[in-house]
Each structure stands twice: as C-alpha cells, then as structure tokens.
Amino acid sequence: MSEMTDPTLLQRLGLRLLRLLLLLLPGAILILFWQWASGRLIATLYVSKPTDIAARFYEMFASGEIQPHIMITLQELVLGYCIGVGVGVVAGYLLGRSPRAAAIFEPYVMAFYGIPKIALAPLFIIWFGIGLWSKVALAATMVFFLVFYNVYVGVRNVDRELLNLARIMGAGESQLTRHVYFPAAAPFVIMGMRMAIPYSVIGVIVGEFTSSVKGLGLFINQASSTYDPAGVFAGIALLLMFIVVANAVAGQLEKRLLRWRPAINTERSEI
Image (cartoon, rainbow, N blue to C red):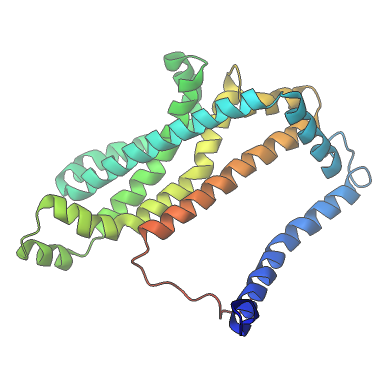
C-alpha cells in the first residue's frame, strides 16, 4: 500500500482539515453577517462592508500609498519588541538570581509598572522627537515589564534541590545558566514574549496616534478623520496580520526551545 493510501495518514489529514474548517467557520460566519448587516442594521458610514474594505485594501497597495507606512511601523515594532525582550530577559534573570537585589529593586519596578504606559508617550516624544525612536521606546517599555516579570518568576521558581544537586556535581555559573535556569525558565520566557506581541503593537500605534510622520497609526488616524471607515478597517486588518505572523513565529520558536518537553498527542483528542 502506498503512503498516500495509508488509512492512518488519511485519517490525520482529515482531522487536520476538519480542525482548519472549524477554525475558519466562525470568522466566515462573522464576515457574512457583517456584509449583510452593513447598510441594513447599521449605516456604512460607521461600519464599512467587507467587500468595500477588500477594495480599499487593494487600492492602498496598488497605489503604493500604504507601503511607506508599513515599513515604518514594522521597523518600530521589531526594534521596540527586540529591545524590550532583551532588556526584560536580562533584568528578570539577574533580579531572579539575586534575592537581595530583588528585595531592593522590586518595589521600584512595581511602582514604574503601575504607571499607565500611554501617559509616557508625550514624554518620549519630548525626549526622542516625533520620529521612529519615540515609538520604539514606548513599545519597548510595554514589552519590558511583561517579559521581565515572566522571566523573574521563572528563575525564582527553579527547583532548589536541582540547583544544589548540579552544584554538588561541579556545575559552574555558566553551566547552571545554560543547563538549569534556562530550561526551567524557558516556558516563562516564551509566555512573556507571546503576551508582549500585542502590547508592542499597542505601544507603536499609540505613539503614532500621538505624533508621527508616517506609520499605520497615522494612516488609521487620518482615515478616521476623513470619514474613511474602509481605510480604518484595512489598517486594522494589517495590524492583525502583524500579530498573527508574530504569534506564528513565536510558536515555532517555542517548539524549538521547548523540544525537550514531551509532546502532547492531539491527534486522538476530541474535536
């Protein structure tokens, strides 16, 4: 029997196809209802039709109107996210490894964490101007606290008996970091990174709403001020694409970093 006619393989493909259809079904129903309701239950001035949004989407790319905004927002997102994750991982690890330092600095971190990050946008614009770096700073700040606390908790929760056993066997600090702390804290790191993705988008868009030369936030703001709901929804759809792609990349990274964990067999689970 050939591989393509293997009943087990066909069953797995059928289950995957069924899961994909179940995943897409609510979205398809929502879009169909939206198309029907727009103009009937609510004026298209407030909620544009999906077909109008698709047409506006095509127009934006065909005219080259949206590409400069996408490039600026992507740069801000990538820089802000990477800086926030990097600083959050280092700070969370160092504070988690040092109980004395944690006792001193944790209250200050908590105090800064309680500040609404949106309130920092005008301050960052004063410091860094209306260009790219004020948005990067705001996004990095929002990402930092989420990653920091997840890494901090992950490091603090490492099994002390495992640490003592590793030290008895002669493990140095670098070996403890690589073979004990990192594997134990990796799920917390990944969780913080995934949670921070939408917050980095929020930080960038809020910064662009406040003051910007280019960017998707500026595009959405201008579309709103000119009563262009199709443009607003098209810009929001682009932001959703960013989040979906970033989550997919984070999911692949999670599989690589946590490949030592036993895999959960989902093929036999009920749908």
